[in-house]
Length: 296
Image 1 (cartoon, rainbow, N blue to C red):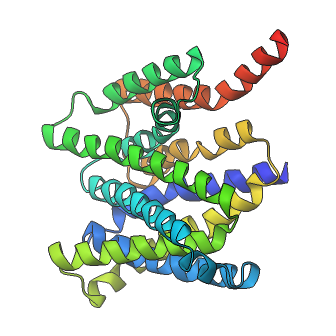
Image 2: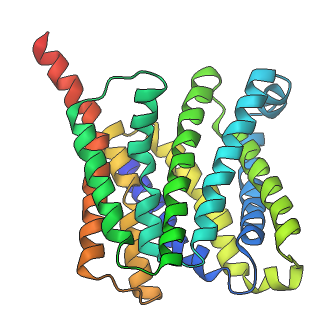
């Protein structure tokens, strides 16, 4: 129960962070927001890495395989977060939050076609529901908004790659906080480079968005990530994944209350279809396990 409550708090923080990501670009560009956010995330996670995983960062840096894996994982996170942040210039929070959760079926599809994992028929039903929900969310909108939503679709793919690479790394060397710090450092560095090339970052404008940057950097990335690690070590995988997916629901509710972003019937049905699809993907391994046990 305690683990479930911690995960629910984490999903609430992540969901409401979508609103901060949107309102935090009033005076700065998306990549300026990202490098400021991940600079704080980096600082938040570093004390945890020093406290519980002393010397692990140097072990990762001096191991070629760990270092390359850390770089590609961080770069996948940069691409996912960068595309998501840029899309929020025009996309609604509901679209961003639900389309971002498409990383769940993407993980299964990547595992199927790259790692040759077996998929149950439930996965294909879930994928169909997610695609239908995505269509309902993005249809009947202006072309530039549809283009923005398509970036969220690509971002979800990079989030899926990010999750798969995390799983590969953790199986080889369990060091979540040190690994997290390195990822955040890479996202910070890449975002800073893009911001310097295409935006005009300055400290005065960054200060105007201090609340949104602190909320998404310290709370969403730092505290939310920590709560997830603590909780998932105690919780069952299936309910844990479902609870964490509630971030999309919290994000939509927060956008409705704070930003007055109201959904029409088509978008509501799209959100429901995606959420059901995501839940089915997460329940499929448990269903498959029960079927195998019955045959034995």
